[in-house]
Structure formats: structure tokens, C-alpha cells
Length: 92
Image (cartoon, rainbow, N blue to C red; front, side):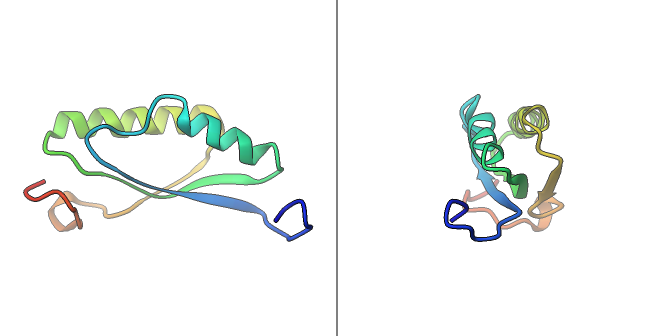
């Protein structure tokens, strides 16, 4: 679309993660590919569903660290509390 002259300022990633989280480097690779087109990149939805709070903490930390290092400056969370968050993992 950018090559066709469609005015696009940026893109947003929806990141609804589970126990594995994203592979290291994927966020950077995707971000850089859009930045090369002159687009801003944001994470518009981020949530992590796991059965283990320590694992959830680690995944959030890994995602945040890689996203910030890749140049992402806007990150929005999908659901601000586990108590009322939608999850497809029973009991998570």
C-alpha cells in the first residue's frame, strides 16, 4: 500500500501471547521491516496468558525490552488486570 502511495503513518501489532511468548528477534525483525518503509510501529494490544505468574512476568519483560530496543515507543495493554481479563486458557 505504501508503494502505491496510500498515506499510512504507522502500524500496530496485536500481541495476545501465551506460555511460549514470541520467538526472540521476531518483534525486532517485524518492526524494522515497517520502519524501513517510513512507518511508525506501536504495540496496540499486549496481553500474556499463562498459568504461571513468574512466566507471565518474564514474557512481559522480554516483549517490552525487545520492543523498546527496536524503537517501539507506544505500547497499550489489553486488559489491565488478570481478574477481569478475557483468556482462552481455562483457569489462567
